[in-house]
Length: 358
Image (cartoon, rainbow, N blue to C red; front, top):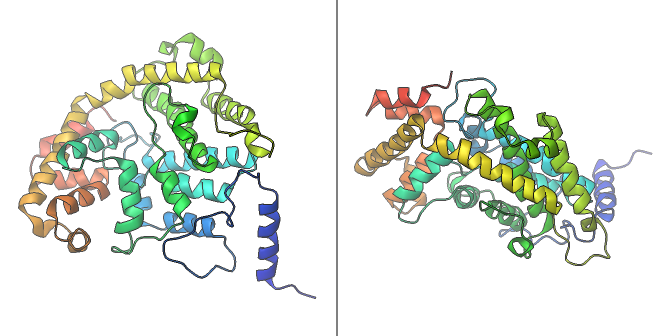
């Protein structure tokens, strides 16, 4: 006798959730959506959120947005999209190993960088100076999800996904502190730490590829601990997180949180400081970066004096606020689109951005 496939999925979902850690956010524990919806026959609510994120225009645009190096022309530089995929892969590995909700973790990971501007953090810095309200990509990611996608309707995601995206960013220095995440659920903590693992390991490769650093310029104690190969460094970090957070997978634990060993925290902090000094700050102070910031400034000034060039649906969403609509429009631009747009004002700026990226 053939079983109803809907019942098969329902039984499967119940079995999966029965195996989750008591600290996991199951679909039953979820706060749900602001606007209630009917259930799906073959997907749980967090799978639906994942799918909605993947099918957004904002997600597709990530493939043409910079990670660290501005508008890179080489084929193998990390883009904002490949970074997002790496964060998702690392997050899912940790989440499954700790018996946490892999679907929720994946949805947060895939949506965490939707709000990034063109030209990476350089573009973000430019927008932060321009906007009266300031600008941060995590806030913009939430704005895209809640307000901008679907022409102002938003995606109506579950509240846990939105919360995890909103709080994925980390301060410089010792960012792993229990007090910083005490009220943050474990799946969101996983994405927070996986984001760091993904960017710190891949940024080393890109910095070497761009001849900004040599691998042997990284302090020996860091490479001895993490490994000389990219795969070794990722495996060391992921394995350490799982082994030091194993109490998140069983009931008899006191306020479990996602963490690394103290010696690895020291190594990662040293590596992050090295990367800020030798990669991130020099790149942000480079001629291409300064030209990219000028491009953002010029586009903003142009839109403010020519509001008819701002998409009408954004002006409607922003109740006619040209400044806010302009920031939303610029944020949605890819590196290539912004460069083409800037050629109306100064073709030399676009050439400066590409300098040295062959």
